[in-house]
Image (cartoon, rainbow, N blue to C red; front, top):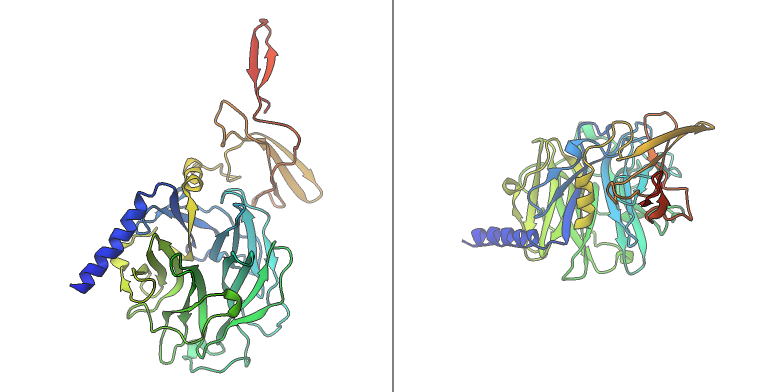
Length: 397
């Protein structure tokens, strides 16, 4: 009876979010080997997730040894900008980075050399972003193996040489970064850390994967702290997941209900657990959630409904440039192509939007470069007299 009541409370909490009106939930993820880049899905209740853009990619990776875009983590800044980091290779010592004002127009991709100072580092896996409001600082943290650096744990043959710990850097502007430091050092191999702020308890919950393989753990645990700069206790909870291997936790509060979504990678399925009491007790609700086919490790995050509305309006992308544009003009300066165009996506056909600029070095992968025409009000109507002597109002395009 208690179990049924708990399930009902989880569902009721999710349903209440459906009618909130101002909030939507997005999920960033990859499919297959991640070479086609960023995918997004949306939900209004935290249970049913629907792919955006007909399941097509929003951004193709261009950085890293293997040009992958695994484990995309997205965080929205106070000014509305979306920042994203991702795993660029199985064996890179860098992570990928890009930003966007709307999840449609993306900046040029960059590499953040977070472990280049460690020549023996094997990897930089599953970087995550977290914005700490009190300090107005972004934390970027990821899993790395540095042979011989930490207490060894027994592993199966296929995982010899892997013994992960969580490292981090901080930044306020994504241009300058702190020195890389150790973030979480438990007595087990740990990957896939993700942090969420509890809106009621006002503390931070970090979900991590116990990666030990002998004996096999491969499950999710939680640990909590009140201030991120104090770190997280290395004594973690018992497993919050079931008798299956899982990874890639994505925590999300839907009202007072805490969901943690994850990849049951051996079963080729996505799952979830639910807590109605702020992480004290958990129930597997995998049979009540639905996700896009082939979804892999990503991040769940909350946005204003207007962000989702815009994403839903532009699902029919141009095959070359992912934007609704018109009147294109192309120039090449040096080794870079520049595409100038008008857009009416934000105003409709009655007015012109601000002209936009896209750029590319190979005519295949394009990045959004904003608008370089300033000091002109493109939304303002201008009166003119046509050939018949009639007064009209028009808009520059």
